[in-house]
Image: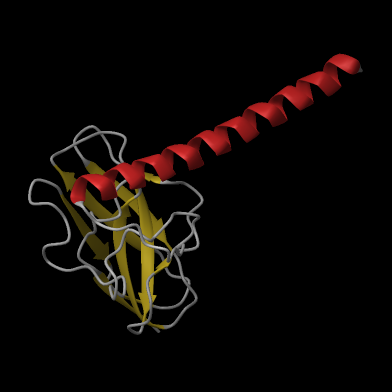
Length: 168
């Protein structure tokens, strides 16, 4: 019984250390990035619902991607089929990342009728294949114009153009 208890305590300690390590690394990473660019640290911080810090977005940015938001050497594409469905009908989403890279994790976001972008929960994460392509599918009961986009999980400045699907 004591080995089971000490195993549980060890696991809890390792998880706590990992969380502290990730948080500390993220803090140090943002501090060094701000120092290198000469920017002052910001005091505002928000999350997008997935636990990802969204404080790196420029002030006044409503989360809408701009044409120049992703770096010129990196880009994401996204396509939806079909573009008009009834509620709970399957929507296939496909796309690619340039340059092609395997294992890049992407977040799917949705905006309904021009509202704010929110992370769309998926049972399986979107991950790119060796040729840089990815695919997933979704169903929604939310009627109206559902716009979808993908965001690189490790670099939220890399965002696809949105694709609109009319759900009735």
